Picture 1 (cartoon, rainbow, N blue to C red):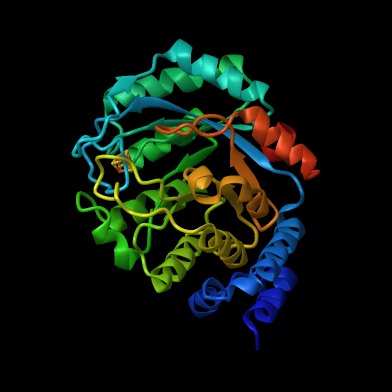
Picture 2 (cartoon, rainbow, N blue to C red):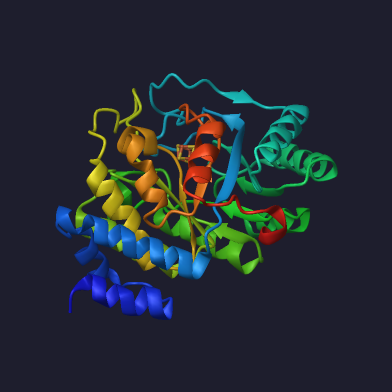
Length: 329
Ligand code: SF4
């Protein structure tokens, strides 16, 4: 049977995801089947997630100088990239949370470029989360690297709603992307987060030199973790990093990945994260009508995203309401 018919039965009718072989068949569909793939992915998203789009703002509490060597990352201190190490204070965190809430976003993610949090970072996050909770109505998410069980428990006790930790790429490709920690270490943090009752946000980057088979492998490995949210990034080659000279992937391949990931995870929040401007340009709209149901508003961590007003206007044109806070708690 044609893979789109299989996907119609599994993802649309039953709400179950495609397996690795079926995912590969989606990722290798001919260009003239792209519209059908995206239309089905959109139907699946509407059926299982509804029309609302979740908006999230992110702020970096500690930027740059990370000891890890993720080859795509300009925040690694190991490479010669122009991002400088910097910390944000608690009043600035609260201000960023307030500005994010004012856009209508329901999630505010505090991000740090670290292997995992030390006591200084945990204390900053503790104070920041308490201050934001006291003053701003918004869900707080964190992305602070690999965690110990004690740190997972503490973040859950603080009321952190969602924790982001990406697998980044397929298990079989991981050693070509990162050498300072293992796939299993990343996986373990994700498992601990879910078991502690926080929502798990786990995704990665497409276009890291993985084969198309590894892209299918990655999608199904993510699905096995049952993440509440999957942020999908497309490599935006950063100067000074080992992947700085790679070609950005083509828009058609990026859209095929968007559609396929939706069919692998019919019920998850699928978010456009970094790199979509360089890869998709104005075609991003097709992604939002092809399975994506969440966006980041405003600046990304080290590259400029779009003006929040532009994204929000686009969603208005597409008649997709921004998810309200009352629907997301
Ligand atoms: S991706 Fe995260 S862990 Fe890897 S170098 Fe960048 S900030 Fe560090």
